[in-house]
Amino acid sequence: RNTGINLDKARAMADEIRPHLRMLRRQVGRYEERDEIAAELDSIENDYYGYRAKSIIGELSRFEPEIEAIDREISAEKEKLSVLENNFKNIESSEPKAKKEIDAIRERRRSLFAERMSLIPKPVAVTRTKRDPITVLDEIQALAEVAVQSSDYEELKAVLKKIIKAVSDVKAASAELPPAEKDESFDKKIAEFDKLFEELDEVEKKLMGELDGFNKSFKDSLTSLERKKDEIQTLVDRRERVSFEREKIKYREEELNNQLRAIGRSFAEFATTEGAPSEIDLSLSERKMFKLRNELAAIGEVDEGIVKEAKETEERHNALESQIGELVKASSDLNELIKELDYKIHHEFSVSLGKINEELSDFAKLIFGGGRVALKLQAPIPRVAIEGEEEPEEENIRQGIEIEVSLPKKRVKGLDVLSGGERSLLSVAILFGLISISPPPFIVLDEVDATLDERNARRLGEILKRFEGKTQFIIVTHNRATMEAADILYGVTMGDDGVSKLVSLKLS
Image (cartoon, rainbow, N blue to C red):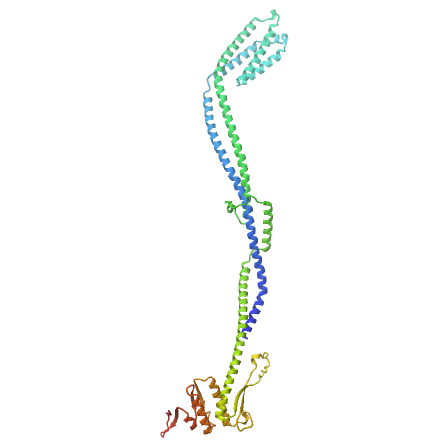
């Protein structure tokens, strides 16, 4: 019954927490699903960002050697440029003195030219020349100014040729004048100026020959120097283009790093690209990551309190289920044990009752000189439930024992017709019938023979002798016949002095 009560309590407690447990299981299930989604997202992120990092690192690794090679080439070319610059400075510093002399000659030529121009008769030139004299003079004056400012030899020569031609035009115009109008002193002076010009040309030509080697070396050195600068600039431009391309990759790297920081990761995790895929569908991966992140956001963060409560509730429920299982098994075992004990009790009781009745028949013959004595089970008596109590169970039904007796020479049967002595003898017979089946170590009998006469008391003594060696009897009696059956007597007597004292006697 107690097992059933405990089982009902355990089931009630399990039923009470089961709905809450189902709710917790669903929530924890979502968290477990979250772990699966997070693991899938982590795998896709590893492939996606690993591939992108691998691409960036691969491209950067391609640019670095190229830039280093260009830097080495620029460094080597700058060393060559330094050599060329030193060579140019040396050539420039070695400029011969002839240049200064040529400058002096050109200054002298300009002075002479001016003097010569002053000798030309203006009126005659205005009226007699075929060409416009004013125009011719203006042209010569302009060419002279160009010659004064020019520092290039070739340009200077071309200008001088034009001046000489203009002077020749003036001479031709003068030659066409009538003899009477010619001024001989003018021709003479013009001829002197021409001779001086020729002398200056010869000297300048000689000096220019001295400068040709210097000019060629200077020009070649300057050309080499500019060419080298152009080559270096080309390399610098190339390096800037490569650096620009590298910076574009660096920008992609920083952009990727920002994306990784936004999801709680870093580029350093993917610095080693071992295991990163060689090819991947970036668009598909991005869509998957977006979908999985939305699912994680819908689930929310893991509530450790709910996880802990779910674990504790699960453990409690499992303990209750285990307890229920144990109680069910215990109840089943107890029911089997009850059945076994019921069978054993009833079977052994019936067997023992049969043996007792056999002994009772012998004792009845011994005590009553015949007749019959037997114990018999009464019919079950239902227990009447008291108000407020539960309905009586089957185990509450009680059975009693009836004594059937039939004495010789008495027609009426039953206990009601027996005298006091006969009832005492019947009680003794039943007592000895019981102990004959299961003898105890000792028995105390308090004046069981009080109502027996001497003949019946002797019969009691005979019965006691039958159990000698099996059970020890302590009998309180005043009956002489009973005392005669004893082995040892203990008695209390009072002497003449009025003091009680104990006496004993072994009858053996």
